Amino acid sequence: MIRFILNRDLVSTDLGPGVLLLDYLRRECRLTGTKQGCREGDCGACSVLVGRLTDDRVRYRCVAACLMPLGELHGKHVLTIEGINLKSLSPVQQNIVDAGATQCGFCTPGIVMAMTGFLLDSPSLCLADAMTALDGNICRCTGYASIRRAVQNLVDGLAPFPAEPMRRLTHLVQAGYLPAYLLEMHQRLAAIEPVTRLPAEGGVPVPVGGGTDLFVQRPDRLTRQPLVFLHDDARLSGIIVDNKHIRIGAATPIEDLKADALLNQIFPFWRKALDHMASTPIRHRATLAGNMVNASPIGDLTIIMLALGARLTIRGPHGTRRLALEKFYHGYKSVDLAADEWITEIAFARPSSQCRFNVEKVSRRQRLDIASVNTAIALETDGKRITNARISAGGVAPIPLLLTKSAAWLLGQPVCSETLAGLIDIVDSEIAPIDDVRGSARYKRRLLGRLMVAHFKACFPKLDLKGWLP
Image 1 (cartoon, one colour):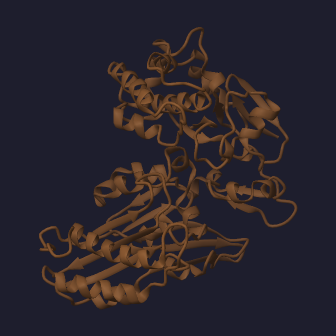
Image 2 (cartoon, one colour):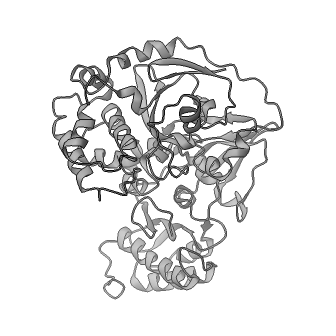
Image 3 (cartoon, helix red, strand yellow):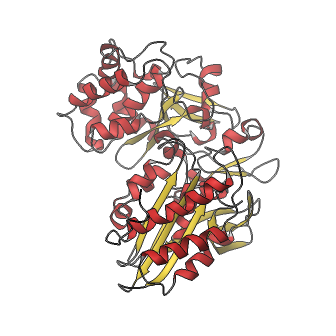
């Protein structure tokens, strides 16, 4: 039995672990405030909060119920739009009404839940973080201006609340933002006994990280297959940074990577780059290893990790092995991973202070979109010449591509515009893009060349590139 708290009630179900939370809420519980929209995690209509017990509090994250399997909810708290109702409208709801920020109302429950998640978990309660919390919600009626006004008005009233999320819940309850039963949730979750994972029946279990691609591609099949949830294994999450290496657990969500203080200190571009990857609810679920195993030729994190020289630790029934990320891909959607193996860790050398690192991505939309072409570069120099280089590119080959010939050619080259011109020629000879919905092969070739210019501009801001810039 899977046991968790749904709003105020402890519930149990013997439905399959691959059954999605959205279907359970609407069909089994008749909680229809959670709407069914895209079923791909793109629209935000099915947004709910899932609370996980930590040492000092229950940490809530906004997720797409259409991609959340029941098997991962044991011992957690699921909070839906029905679960935050008070005797009158909460300030979140009232601000939406006052700003005229709803018309047909279909998207409104998801927006309310996203803003409630912001109240519970945001480290700053600032307007920028509030707008980021809403980045997974689509509204076809309002034009968004009224929603922005509602968010601005909400944030303007948050100044009295503590900055630390662990101290904030009591104040939110006292001020009428949230129901009082949430104050007891830590104790109630602690009383739920851990589930005993029985040996899988029916074949080799499918490892599930965030499931943000898996449950889009084959949701019906996953309801009938044995699953193993990697998020349940604490050994597979977390970020360790020392003087020589950076080690990241395979099941670490993208949002944790984005928020990590040390990674943001080491890579000044870090938060901005990860902000352009998916939406907040997807980043709360999607994992680093999942981005790699999905084997998309334009996987954003994969392209970054290739340029950083990442190595994978892979565990299976016959032991543990390590593999350079560039050797993981054999062909389109083909990887060096057996059915009974999964990645446990991704590690790479901590960049030196001389390292210059940059990431570029071009997509049809600036945010929340799949890249047409993406690329990353890591360079070191002795002040005059390039002494070390790694370049990766996505969208220009059947696999996420490490440009080994181009990087090798750069070694020993002077830092000048002539080197950039030569690099563009070498890069062009190393790629094999195709025409597809994200652009023609010719467009992608020219685009990657321009992104090499962007790399040089970012890495060498004092370099004279007048002839290359618009």
